[in-house]
Length: 171
Image (cartoon, rainbow, N blue to C red; front, side, top):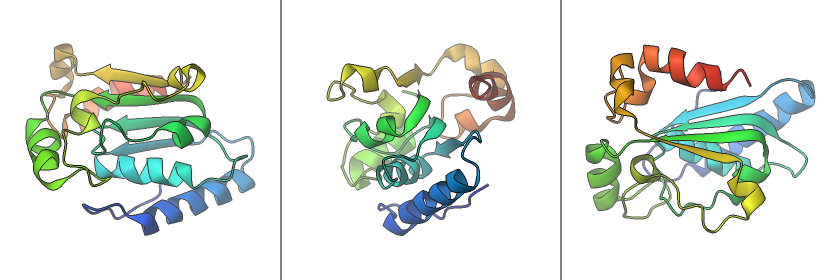
């Protein structure tokens, strides 16, 4: 597990550190399965790191939980470096952190707007083949029985992760 310290503003050092670790891991395990999973600002670190990867370095799967980046964040580089999917979980119920807070103080990419973790990403700028690599999952009220109430930390609930996130990673 890679521990990355994130703050409010883009953590270029954390992005570079993660990119370097991904490159080193991929060199040591060329056929290994590499999955990146982030929550909130950690999603920004992952996306920034993927943009820093060498063209030949790929990850298998990326999962973004409540990403605190703007809906217009450029996903081009990330989509080019993922072999399977980028799964994005967003919730319109996350109003305190990903609507009010990001609207007043800015997202990870320093834009004062409702974050993608609240409304999803705007994929219109991506080419169709790359757009197909991004699967967006809006909040489903049925997830409440799994401990996910749709709030900022809801997607981290143990039962939700076990029943919804983990099965995605087996493909």
